[in-house]
Image (cartoon, rainbow, N blue to C red; front, top):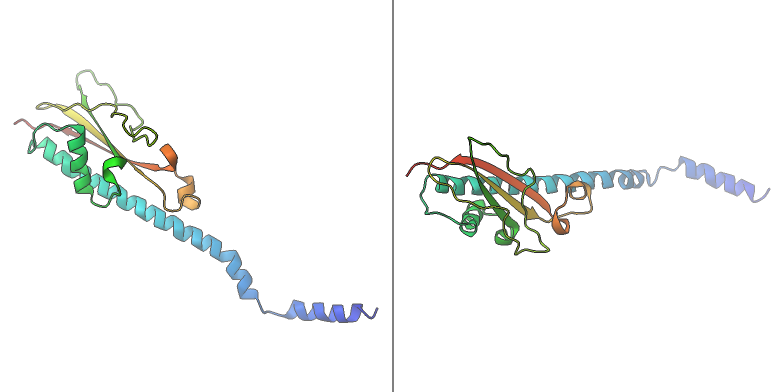
Amino acid sequence: MMFARPTLSWLRKFRRDEDGNSTIEFVLVVPFIMTIFLCSFEMGLMMIRNVMLERGVDLAVRSVRLGTTNQVNADQLRDMVCNGAGIIPDCQSAVKIEMVRIDTAAWVDIPRDADCVDRNDPAAPARSFTTGGMNELMVLRVCALFDPIFPTTGLGFRMPKESNGAYAIVTTSAFVMEPG
């Protein structure tokens, strides 16, 4: 009985005490806020890389389409895309280019999945790269691999992964070779 009174008195004081309420709220809310912050940072970086990759592809396609460069091969076109893209890290080894001539009379779709760099076998050649002639319809598809900044949280965790945990950004452009 003697032990019960001080304990009950202490429990009543503890129940009425409001010290530490903000700590509990902080512990409950901050993980969600940090996850949202990390997801938005990852999404913003992914969108910037996508926009810059599309810019590089547009500049390269314009140059090829108008014939301002001679016939290009896959490496030269990749260099043109990388020069126009600007902020893509390690662009030369992260980007793979596929260019296909489309016959408009006997239409055959290109494969649905993009041909990305296989980090386990980086020397694997592109699926197909054919240069076009005058008035031919061409489809250029560029795939770039990036490592997520925060791979274990939010968006980085949910993004579909390619080789070795990287996510792919794919840009496709169709154009007609201008007559020279």
